Image 1 (spheres, protein in one colour):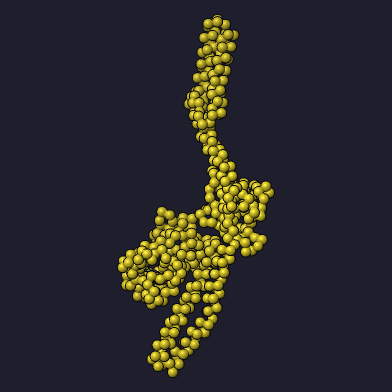
Image 2 (cartoon, rainbow, N blue to C red; image 1 turned 90 degrees about the vertical axis):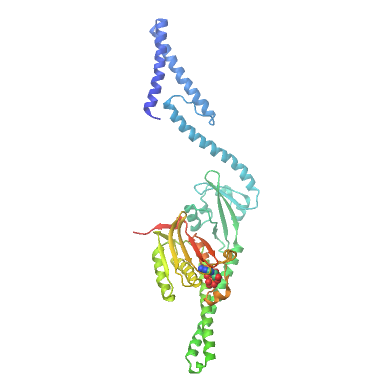
Length: 430
Ligand code: ADP
């Protein structure tokens, strides 16, 4: 409220009371009566105003008693604050009802406040986490479920992806937390025991990793013998030469397959880890372009670098995803240049790899990132593909919170787009 407005209002009240006093003085012809009338008038004016304000306090949903420019603004502020309070009250009045419903569900559920302190949990959560609400209430969630990952997750305040945790003491015990907003600023968390799922995923990863690793040594030996045999004078025989060359090609394919499988299982096993190195995508693209120029001397890769953003992530993974996309564009198109753009989009910086090649029929697009999925098997084999390139791209996208989009038209070409979220975009270091 402006002090001038307040003074004007009070001056008017005072003037009214003085007038009442002067009138009483003249009518009664007594200054004492005038003074008493002045005081009574003043008390009545202020008393009436106070009465209206008190009455309004009891009925916050009503508009404030507007009386004069000065008080109007202060009452309007109080009104806004009170309305927020009423809304908060309404949602907290709804909370007991929701809590009652959650108390009876089998899914373990917790509620934390905006400071991440536990304010409620149901019996199922007590049982699963081995806690008692009365003992843990008010404690920060990361104290109840220790681990740096949870603390960081809560600090980042981005609950789009569920969080997997191994809060011990059993190192195998794995839980998954899914957060959603509850009330004005609380969070409702559903907890799931995913120990079996985690174990199976780990077993599959380890199995693929171990088999690939074990195959590597015999393959190196076979390749070594093949190279020696090719140099033997006895192998000058045309049929033998052809067979040995073909064996060499297959051995190379197998080697690529093994290294892609190993790489994929390594990316998968690091999926939950934080990848926050500042990657200069423009420099990375320039490097990849010059590396590919050696392997594809007759093809052109055009760079269009419009965004100046760097990305927070893992360099090896991003390099591999981007190389896979560009190599695919080169493999599945002929003479036309491949256009690689790094541009800003409304949701974050985006990498586009476009070619004017074979294109892909719409029905194949949803399955492209599956392991070993190939649109045209013979073509893929002819180009030496392992069928794992886009699976690798997909995993790298997931671990960088990015989205992979594919647009393609048979006979016209394809565009593969990796869109990074704003949270991972940072300006280049000075
Ligand atoms: P591959 O090693 O066989 O290339 P990928 O996982 O990289 O495996 O790709 C899967 C399949 O997607 C390929 O076999 C190919 O049929 C198709 N594909 C990928 N990129 C393109 C592209 N730029 N143009 C046309 N088809 C593509």
